[in-house]
Image (tube, rainbow, N blue to C red; front, side, top):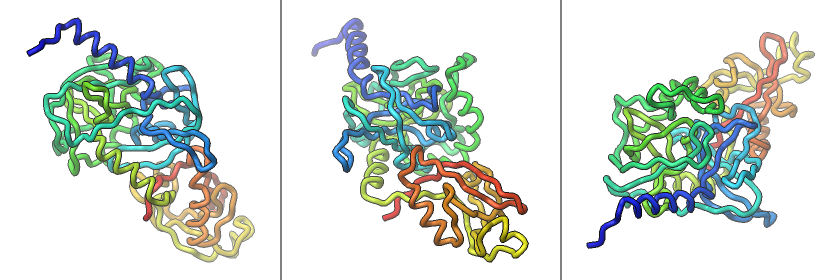
Length: 344
C-alpha cells in the first residue's frame, strides 16, 4: 500500500484549489462582494452568443436588493448577470451571464458521497477571492429540527471587514431565512468545515475537485450544503418549464371609485386582498388594500392584465420591476424583484 506524505497532500490540495478557482465566481451587488457562485454550465443563447449559468444561494441574490447584479471571475473580469430562477425552498438561485472563456465546474452526483470523505470549500470570505477551507463530510441527513441555521457569519468573535457585506445582510435577514427555509424536509451535506461571510453560494468539492454541493448555512460549527443532485433538479426545471414572475399577492378586479378615477386614469383596477408572508410583495411593502395601477409604467385594469404584464417582464434586466400603486388616494411606486416559479 502506498502512503502519501504530508508534503504531497499539501501540494495536491494547493494544485486542486488552483485548478478549480476559474469555476468559482464572486457575486456582487454593484461594487460590493456579497457571496460566491459556481459556473455550473456553459452553452449558447438563441442568437448563438456564448453564455453561462451561475448557481448560487437564493439568500445571496436577495441581498443584492435592487443594485446591479454582477459576476466577478478569478481573472478579474466582471460581467452583468440576470436572474433565471429562484428556489426559496432549497435556497438556490440561477443566474445567466453572456461572454466567453467560461470554465464550467465538474459536477458529481451527491448521492454517491460518503460520510468521512475529504471535502473543500472555495469562495470569497470577507472579499478574499478564491479562499479555501478543508474538512470532512460529517453527515448526509436533513437538518435537526432544533438547529438554528443561519447564513455564514464570522467565527471566533472576528468582526467582519467593511467589504464583508454578506455578514451584514446575513444578520439582518437571518430570521427571514430560517422562516422561509425548511431544510428538515430534505437531505443536506453536513461537513466539518469552516464557512465565513462570502462563502455562501460557493462549491463544496470532493478530493477530485468535483462539485458535490452548494454551501449555504452554518449551525453548531458545521457547514450545510445543498446537494448537487437537488441543484441539478432545480436547473432541469428551469430548462423544461416556463418561468413566471410571482409577487405573492391575492388580487381582485374592482371598479375604481368615481372620486379616484381622475387620479387612477382608469375605470377599473386591481386591488390587493392578500399578501403572502415573506413574499416579494411583502418585502417591498405592498399592503392589503393597495390598488395596482401599472407594472413598469404599463397600465393594468384587471387581474388578468396584471398576470400578462408580469409575464412580459420575465426577461427584464435583474428581474426587477416597478409597481405603480394607489394607496389612500395617493399614487406611489415600489420596486421589487418577483420570485420566478417554474410552470409546466
